[in-house]
Length: 472
Image (cartoon, rainbow, N blue to C red; front, side):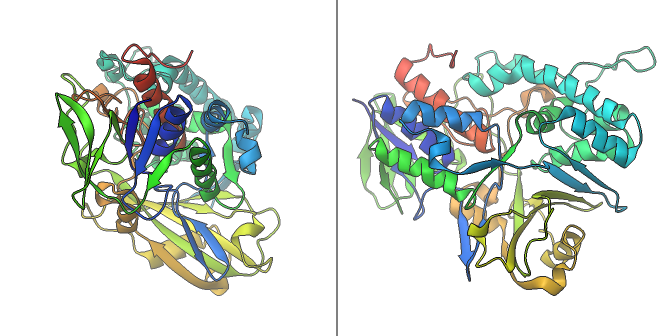
């Protein structure tokens, strides 16, 4: 039985810990803060409850597999998870609306035809068909396998080239160019917005980013009743069932190395914690740098996007027919407005809890949005918002930094192929034997499903060794 020390208690950390524990390892998790969950926090006040991080889960199969592999009770026996339908409502700057149903290509096409004219739905499906090809080409190396030593092959954009005027473009197009050329007009704005919501700039990422809206439309968007924090609580309980130990309020100062390999942790208070292997499931920049193997993907810089979130307590019940997720488009911001139909997040049926989120620069990297301006913009998704507002609170990048330890409160997006590999993350192995990377700052990157997959990858590498090539 090997001793494994895990840095951080976020979702990637706990996914790793649970899988290692069921494989017979002795696992201890060291978390800088007072609780588990990382970005999946919870804010409560006056009977209202809000998620401080992701409000929906895409690709739930990752967590279904995790719970099947680590215990007797499946995921659905541990949380009440429901598919969100309609999947999303778009409110464009000119007031035009489009409401797309869940996991229905025909339904989405019909909705787009109604909103933007005949033929729009066919063009949308053509784009997602090409995104499916990119997904099929990269799903295993980007999500289900440790990063290959020849990761440079992922630097080529897998989105299929499209002929224009009989010629092929010499330079792979960006997502924004793809949206404009293949969809155009409002439908192109919809595709770009679905990528912007991940904190990515459509004008700076390759067309392969279309796999993100493809993933949502194909596998659906899922909500956990009681709030997404309930998913973190279920995973924490699973870890405890597997005898994982947790040490809270235990910041890690550095990873100890002896004999040329990781040998444990030095905690901020000066205490040493010996271990046979160490898993860093937090932003590795907080440790002053992690050695990368020769030729490894360099760590991303500190300028990643963050989120500014408003928690809104409203008087009056949630109207019938309200869509769970609305994206509000504007020239200066894209808002994600979540209005869950969940009695567990409100004091009674006469109130509504609404979460409004905007992508913004990480702390110290640029100006934050004006919360009052965001409230005015959110009123386009919530009629009569100002008159119903009891109070609101702001959750800023600094709050994310405090909860997750990420520099500036940065929120990592998923890894993407293309762009010469600059949208990849460091491999789960490092230049120091016995030190591994998990969570959103390692391959395959951020987001609940991707961070959860790091658990399978790191556990496989530790238990099976360097020859592990992912689940078959």
